[in-house]
Every structure is written in C-alpha cells, then in structure tokens.
Length: 339
Ligand code: PHE
Image 1 (spheres, rainbow, N blue to C red):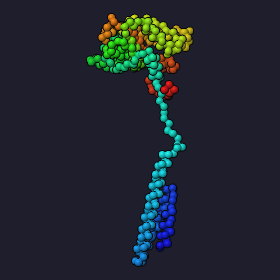
Image 2: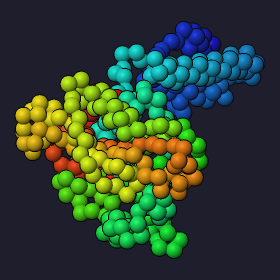
Image 3: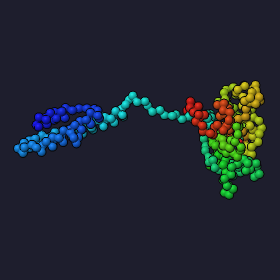
Image 4: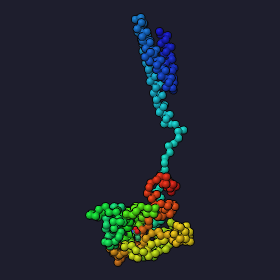
C-alpha cells in the first residue's frame, strides 16, 4: 500500500496541464467518488492497527497534495482563459459607425463662418414665442395676413403663444437686451402652417442678420451681402437687389445672385432668368428700433434673412425638400465627408 501511495504521490506532484479535459481526468482519477483516494481510504480500514499511523499520515498528505494540485491548476486555467480573451491582439477591432452632418447644418455652418469673419456674433432665441416678438414689435399691423391661422401655428390665444414664423424675433430680443452697436446673426428653426410638398415644408431654417450702429446705410448692407455672395457662391458671383416689402424694414429688398450653373445665360435652375433669389433684406424700420427701446434718431441699421433649405437643396442637388426632414440614414450618410 505504501508503494501505491508513493507512486500516486509522484504522479500528482509532477502532473501539469493547460487542458481542462486533462485536469478533469486528473480529478476523477484522484478525487472522484470512485477514484484512487476513495479506494485507498476503503483499503485503509483493513490495515493492521500498528501500521495505521504511518499509512494514515501518508494517505492524508496524498489527499492534500492532489486537492491542492487540482485547485492550483484549475485557477491557472480559469485566469489564463480570461487573460487570453483580453489580450487577443489578433481579434478584429470593433468598428464605429461614424455620423455625418445634416445638409442643413453644413450650409448653416458655412454661412455662419463667413459672417463670423465680418465680426457678427451668434444669438439664439426660443422657437416657441409670443405675438410681440414675432409680429407686433416688428411693425406688423394687427390685420397682417401672416398672423392669420393659415400661416402661423398658434398654440394659445390668451396668453398668446405661437411658433415663430421667422428668426426676426431674435432680432427683437437682442435689441431689447443690448444697446448698439449690435452686429449679430441668428440661425434657427422656424414654422409656418403650409402644405408639405416637394418645394415647401411647415418647418425650415433661417439665418437672420442684424447690424445697428450710428450711420449704418443701405450701401453697408449691399456691400456686406456682396461679400457674402462672393465668399459663398464664388468670386465671380453678381448680386441684384429688387425692391420688396417687409413690415419691419424700409426700404426693403430681395437679393438675387447670378446663376452659378449657367453663368447668367438661363437654365432650368434659374428658371431661364439668369438669377436666383437668395434672401430678403432692408433697413430696419424706425418703428422697430423704437419698439425695442433704441433711439431711431441716433441709430440706423440693416437686417437680412436667408432661407437655408433652398440653399442646401441647390448645393447638394436634392430635388425634394421633404428628404431633409425624413431622417433616412441612406440619404444622410452621403454627407459624412463634410464632418
Ligand atoms: N423675416 C423675413 C422672412 O422670414 C426675412 C427678412 C429678414 C427680411 C430681415 C428682411 C429683413 O421672410
């Protein structure tokens, strides 16, 4: 019996493995219910009393050794499994889906950059507004059609809450809070109760520009817009100002740029006129300055408002305005290079 114990002890001492299968075999052989140790402890009952002390000790040492060996190898195996997983340098890297800028955002940022270079700051205002900031302070007469249910989304009549129909409302908020000189642009989302179609939507974006100081003239407005047009559309771009009407500017104008597709010769893009309408502008009406607490005898100013969607459609050759608001990733992914 001592021989068997010695042989098993030598085997347990030298046993090494990195395989879970081999280790399990070791466990069954040594520590299993029908294993060597169980058998030896059974045989031990028949050992004569005078040998029991020596053999008993050896048997216990063997049992401890086999158990310790099993535990040690099991630990190594478990942790090495973990380490191997963590350190598998050949595993392929996880790929991240890169987002892309929205075409409206791309155009907006390009325009903002140009006016930043001219010293315009950016101001922001709420999309949910009141009658004063969207209409009354901007010299809209009470019966003006823009206040009509067909154009404006009214949320409640009393108190008067509505969705802003243009970012000119931010112009009022800026003038209320700041004395001239003011030179700011306000990019933002606006809402109009219009039927959604290929060419128009009930939600779109504008950038409103405002400059108020002493001696600001229409010539300043024209020069600023010419600079913007050349920077944005190319150095050979021409501009044309047509008389127009807005309640909050006097005189008012609409600005066209020479069509960059046909160089003014006439094409489908410019409806064969050679010109494309880009924005509305004018000198801020004295009533508007006074309504916001600015002395119209001391200060003058100009304002302009650019619609972003139309510029984005043209820039990227998108034919349907609704595509800008459907959030179809197949369409939006195409703009990732503009990040
Ligand atoms: N707010 C005008 C619009 O929404 C645009 C505009 C802004 C015109 C500033 C003149 C001056 O159509």
